[in-house]
Image (cartoon, rainbow, N blue to C red; front, side):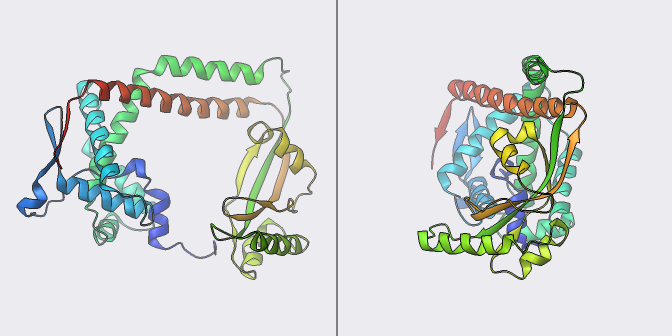
Length: 314
């Protein structure tokens, strides 16, 4: 249940995303076979031990799934290209920034950096693996943002204008605080199982005590999760969802709907009018900026790959 601390593996899976995983050796001595060269990227070697460390962290981040040698090797190649390009523009972050990012991840798993180092080390992931990956990813993100700042800013301006276009200074919107209530189902649930859980959700819907007691209420039910509150405006939710939420009283639940995790209902914790749309426009611009940065990042990396000399040795 959400009222209990998540296991370490679950917390690491949520916090240590595949995009933020390692590519380096620990300080411990390794046998010669482990030190063999797996790939050469523009004359720079990637060791087989680096691939092994990456696979281990991919498995940890994915809950034991998806950590193939081929995927790890490709991510290490991408990382090598990113860090080399960041160095060319003198945009590599300092070791102090990397240590701070590492400590932040540890803190979010409710561990000290030393405890976190020990925890991932017990699962075959050297701390240096994650730190080197952090250095490459943070440096690359800064480089992309700086290099394409003008283009990203222009697109952000477009979205701000489009959201506010034709509006009046007192444009109003509705802001919701919501909690998802999920009656969990296995991945390959049968239609009978889905119908059974839907019936259980409908029965619970009439007894729902409101958001403040939601976790306690869920603990009395079988395999029911209550997610943390989120705040969304009608502009972010879109008209179909907003229209559906408008029919439900504060403290109530929407009708059960099938979702990826099971059968889901949404609790309305708070509903209020927003005097103007400035917050909506700001959030929309930030979201667009992130999307544009991702698109530019992919194009930029593809260009680097097209010019790179990559030799896979094993």
